[in-house]
Length: 125
View 1 (tube, one colour):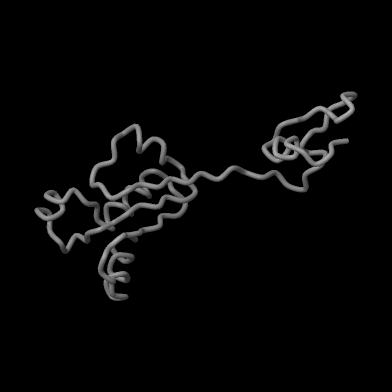
View 2 (cartoon, helix red, strand yellow):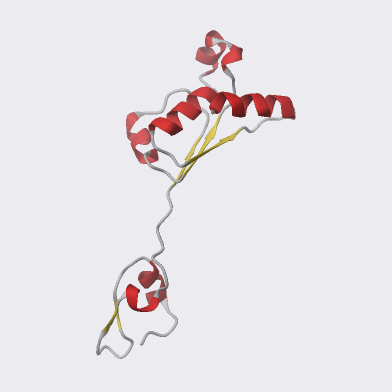
């Protein structure tokens, strides 16, 4: 058997561990009811272009959290000058990367109205 220890974490991650008395091995399927799958989280700050190596790290994330400061209504010039991302671009990026869930966020000193939030969500979809 195995007493509570770091071996529990190894078992949860799918690794077999030696018994505490050293006479055998405990396999995850012997003690776990279901296999636990690791989750992948990607968090990106607000920038218009995601470098390819960083994009690769986001691929197939269970959750992509990405700041989206602007909407396409802000216009291309404003988007290019500020270097911020739009909700639409974040939504497309998340889809292209195969992300399960895309969460938009924005840190601002001003309150954002519910109408603006609904507009951002519609654009991201």
